[in-house]
Amino acid sequence: MDMIDTTLVKTVLLGRSVVAHLKTGNITDFEKDSLSKELTGVAAAHGFRLVLDMAEVVMVGSSGLGMFLAMQKQANAAKGKLVLCNLSEDLIGMLKITSLDKLLTRAKDVDAALKLIG
Image (cartoon, rainbow, N blue to C red; front, side):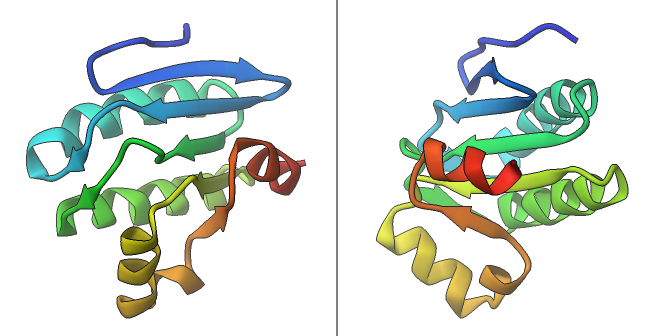
């Protein structure tokens, strides 16, 4: 699948990994379906080695969290890796409160995320 550039996300291939720069400030029920479809398609085509650059994201709703968990499950099944990076302090706090920090891998920035994927 080709890389994508929509109003919600822009993906680039760096080495063997897909880096998805999320361009939406919110990930709610409204954005989740489109994002999930776009990201899953491009990630699956590249062994599910996916970095989500969250620099522009300020709010993630419960459906967005569910999307991350579903993508994590798909990455595990494909023996790939999902890494979230450039999270705001608020988003890091939300992951800790919900204990999702134990299930989702995060990194400081894209370079650190790519190192975690290997």
